[in-house]
Length: 175
Image (cartoon, rainbow, N blue to C red; front, side):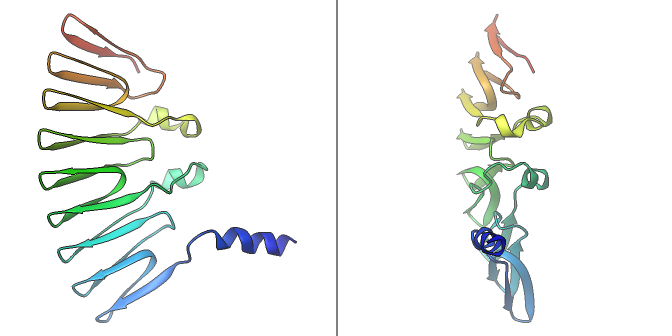
């Protein structure tokens, strides 16, 4: 019974693979090859992408592997020969960026990409975190919690229990 359970649990994860090309090899997950190069993600949740002869790979942050949170949303996004791997990836005008954690968010405005991730203090409580929000205003943006904007500025708390308020044309946020 225990052996059957172990086989069932292990079969749910992708198996590591090795890929070779032109005498070069790499082993891991989601391996890609281009122009005689090979690269693989280090974990089953990692992803790789090849674009314009270049390879990009990303994995969830190491500390997140031990939290029990769902790490399956990691992606790689490529545009104009560059790429990024992470969460909630966004691109605009040849720029691409991703959040580093599953709770982070990205937004594009006025040809720029803004990404935000919860603070280290908030990540300490990773099992209860909610996804951040992003807010844009007059070409600028911020990502976090309880975001507010006024007079072309945007600010957000970096912890879910924080709050923001606007007064006298400024934004104030608690941590």
